[in-house]
Image (cartoon, rainbow, N blue to C red):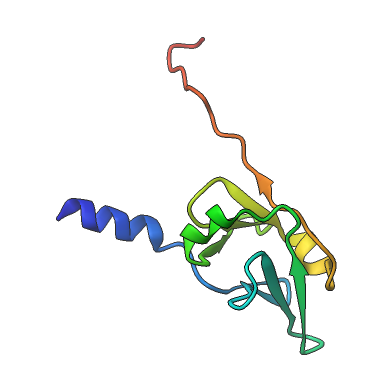
Length: 111
């Protein structure tokens, strides 16, 4: 029972759409490797193709999450993210997925 609660808790931070800086962002349901950005002020949608898309990212089911500092959009199920400024500025152009570096090991003894 605890395992099920833990899995649900870890997924709770991901959404299909996020809102930040006057735009709404979500993956295009019809075109893998594309993001839809809706500019709330102009009431305009534009699609941005992700140059380095990998179909292994489909395992995240379109889940995204805004970082607490609002500079990145995390892609569910991995260490990948999109830069918020690049998304806002893409206006139909291509963007790239970035990868976060993961710590190999953590030493607590001062080394």
